[in-house]
Image (cartoon, rainbow, N blue to C red; front, side, top):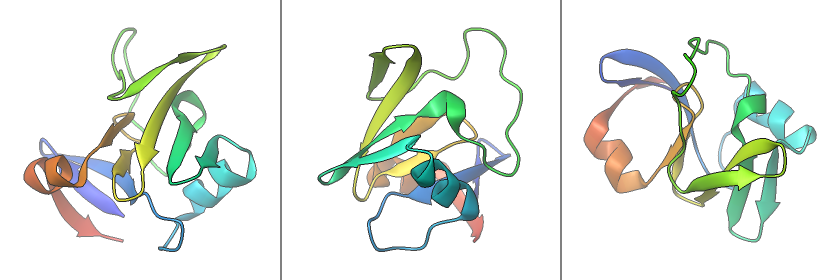
Amino acid sequence: MKALYKGRPAYVWEISKTGERPDWIEEALSKNNIYWLDNRVRILMTALRPPVVKKLKMGEGGTIGGGVDALGVYAYGYVGDFLDATNQRVVSKERFLKHYQILGV
């Protein structure tokens, strides 16, 4: 789905095993860039390719609840959290509803 965060467009996905998945999520799942671990996912943020991703400057775009794992930066999210691929972060549903405005799917 597309949303606004701080007035800028962002591509987000509500983490769900059964819900709707955009093409860029399906691609990430097929390449194991997003990998299910029971009711949570491990996400290789640097490999995500949503339709439009802004260019990040060095040092921007850290993750919430993520960490460095091997050669990439991984974030972890639970079912019901939101993956904001544009800003490379995982946010809780509560935070998403407070700070984001849904534009459409």
